Length: 124
Image (cartoon, rainbow, N blue to C red; front, side, top):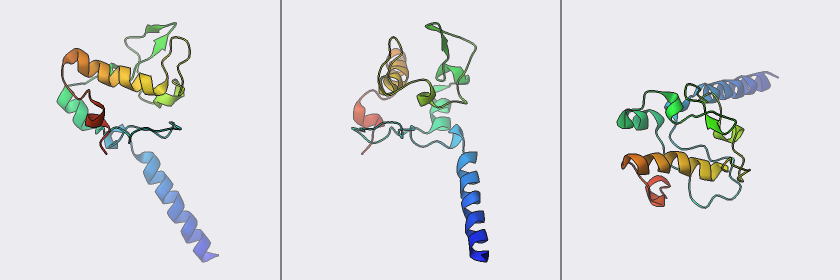
């Protein structure tokens, strides 16, 4: 009985610690939602990226759309990308993989900074 209580306490502690981590602790893009991963998850150190890119507003990356238009002052940083994007494209809403590429790679291309080749983000 005492072992079960200790084990349960340890599991609860691990769950609490894991859920307390935020995007600031992020090392890789969340790829758990992809059924057929062609490459490893993209390396992405959230705070380092934002500091280097001089991004101060969350909604620069964490966007919100209503009726097909981006809501400028809204942010979705409290949600996972998969909460809005399914794996497949649906109408005008890009699928999850395409959404990542449009958001990340699209920004890198427009600013002419940052990685754009597959292996630069998806490091084996």
